[in-house]
Length: 141
Image (cartoon, rainbow, N blue to C red; front, side, top):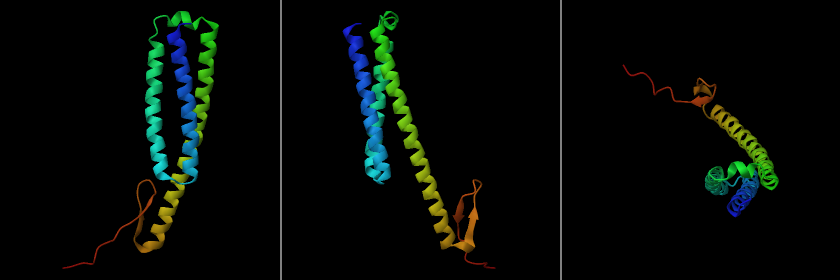
């Protein structure tokens, strides 16, 4: 296995490990409702994902990639990276569920507040979401 291939695979493994750490930090920030921290983590995740994509592209452009795939140590490193990627996907799915649950709770709270505020002017949109609006100030002839 060439030095460049080893370095690229190690860089990819390091990137994925860093992404796992960011996903864990993101979940913690969601739970503690720290919106600014969630935003900063999201920016870091985007930059890291770009780096992962670039590293993946560099690996795919290796001149001797087909020969490397036949080597056991290369295949073992790739399998390790794939296992780490599966862990990343799992943690990302957990974070997605937490976000969706949180958004649903906020939406229910919003509808409850709207119902209390203007119960006589509450209507529903096409999606069944409550909304209030004033019906006008009266008729002027």
